Each structure stands twice: as structure tokens, then as C-alpha cells.
Amino acid sequence: MINPSNLFEQFLGPDAANSMRQAGGSAKQQLDGMGMGGFGGGAVTGGILGLLLGSKKMRKMAGGVVGYGGAAAAGAMAFKAYQNWQQGKVAATAPVATRADIGHVDRNFLPKATPAADGQPFQLVMITAMIAAAKADGHIDAQEQKSLFEQVEKMGLDAESKAFVFDALRQPVDINAIAAAARGIEQATELYLVSRIAIDVDHPAERAYLQALGHKLNLPSELIAHLDHQVEAAASN
Image (cartoon, helix red, strand yellow):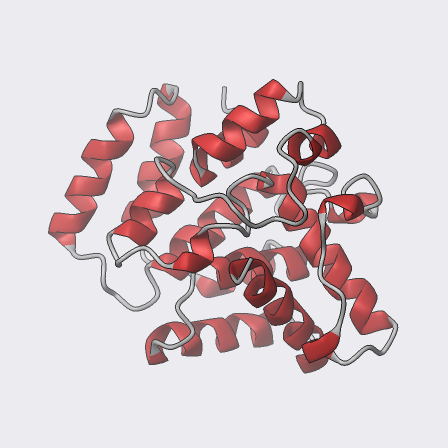
């Protein structure tokens, strides 16, 4: 049986997965033990996200954002963006999430807290969203997909986890299904944020996909600006 939390961390890479294990599952210790001032300084390597982005000339954005923080960082960043938006702050100068924010995240922004709207674990929807975002420009052709399958086979995932990942890689992008899986604005912000991590906004097709996703998630443009700011700030650390 799939362990959604473990698969999500493994999807991001060994930095996130190992830090979770070393911290005994404590999100706060996960970052504190590394002396990180924010979420920067790591690189998503070895995980499936790293393979996806690596096949597209791995971008710096995949580094500090989730490399050490994993699901804990994603939740903290989404919650910080939401708070800033609610408080009417200007996105470009709004505070960004740091390790101090972990442990003070609203429960509804924790990926494992509530199932998705369709009943499946929300972490699995987040994985699907990141894969879809990485495929948005149609760059991953049949040969690259075959190579990805071969590399995932070597990762030591259980049979059900591999089947889930292979299906997500193989299936066409269904932006409507991804958006429909969000239960409330909290999950919508997280789906947008993790998709933004896997997107190259300088690429027209990927930028168009992200804009369409934000619209289908019914996210206010000001909140989207705050989510973009969180990702951009983390990428620059």
C-alpha cells in the first residue's frame, strides 16, 4: 500500500526524504538541524522531480524551495502567501516563509491533514500536479519518458508507488481533474504553488498552463502574485 507522505518526500529527492527520517518526522527539526535560515541551500537531486526538471535542463528553482523542506516547506510557503494576501500586503515586498514559520502553519495547509476533494490522499494530487506542470510544454517525448521509467525503476519504490508514478507520467495532462481535486482555497493554493515550482515561467506554453491552472482553481490574482513571490524568493536563496 502506498504511503503518500513517504512517496511525496521521495518524489522531491533524497534531501527531503532523508531529512524527514533523520528528524523522526518533525518538520521543525527537519530544517533546524540543518541550520537553514530559510528554505534555500539545497538541491532536489535524485528524486523524480529532479529527473523531470533535469530532462529539461534542471533549473535553480528546484533547489532551495523544497529540497530540504519537503511537504513542510510547501505548506509553510502556501500559508505565508495566504496570510500576506489576507492582510493586504504588497506581494513584491511581502515577508517570505522561513523555517520559523514551520510549526505555526494552519492545519488546513498541511498536505496530509485533509484528503483531496475526490477522497484520495492530497499528497498524491500534489505529485500529479507537479508531473503535469513539468510536462506542460510537451517537451518530454517518448524517448525521454522511457528513460524516466528506467530511472524510476532504480529508486527502490514499492510496486504500488511505482505504478502510481508511471501512470502519472504516462497519462495526458488533465488540468481540469487537478483543479477539481482541490478541497477549498487552502489546497488550491498548494496545488498552484507546487505547480509553480515545476514550471519555467519564461516558457510561453508553461506560463500559459500555470495561468490556466490558477483560473481553474479560482484563485484571486492577488493571491497568485503572493504565491509567485514565495517561490521566486525561495529560488533566489
